[in-house]
Image (cartoon, rainbow, N blue to C red):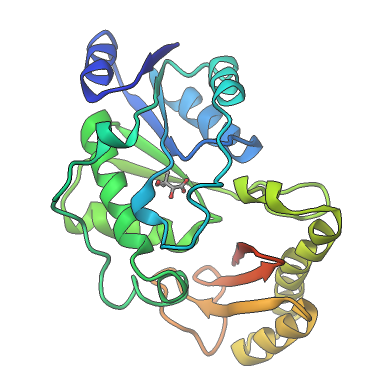
Length: 273
Ligand code: PAF
């Protein structure tokens, strides 16, 4: 595995490769969810590139940028064992200058739900993903469905800016008890981890209601809110794949989402139906 720390090193590494490139952008603290993305990239491409970069522009002031888990040694090992060919591991200076052009999230989809809770977050995500895609120039790029709104916005960016890359969405990976894997789960103590299960339990209830023919979005959200008590819920939402709010679930074109704080840790989860 080649470790590239600058754009020049990345370019030199990519110059030695032929065929399709599968790319998995990450912020590190890799878990099985990331490994699933890497394995799919490995199966479907000649070359696999992973980036690890804790992107400062997607964190709001007061968020967890400084304490975001950084696990260089373990992450490098996971990448090596997963068959990654090139690991891009830049520092902030390799990615950003002082006064730069940025990508802006679209007005509506960028400023609801996650965008409302974290204004500016998606501008940072889109900007860094644009930079990374321009540097790696992959055939396919892999993202988890857990960050559903991020996935929708990146898909829109790729379409709107006529970028030549195929986005491959991958299912959320969960612990046996339902907790969606997230690098931020390490912030949870034992009691909070149990509390955090309320998110997946609420989504399970939403799925059950839909399977029983209860498609009313308000009723689904009410049932979810009851199960989420006493967590500090930021939102529960029933939207279509375009992130437009739905009054009724449309099977095949609905995402039910939740964001809540467990202690000081902000968790998100969703189910696609
Ligand atoms: O999902 C993430 O880990 C990040 O938002 C991403 C896409 C790597 C951009 O920093």
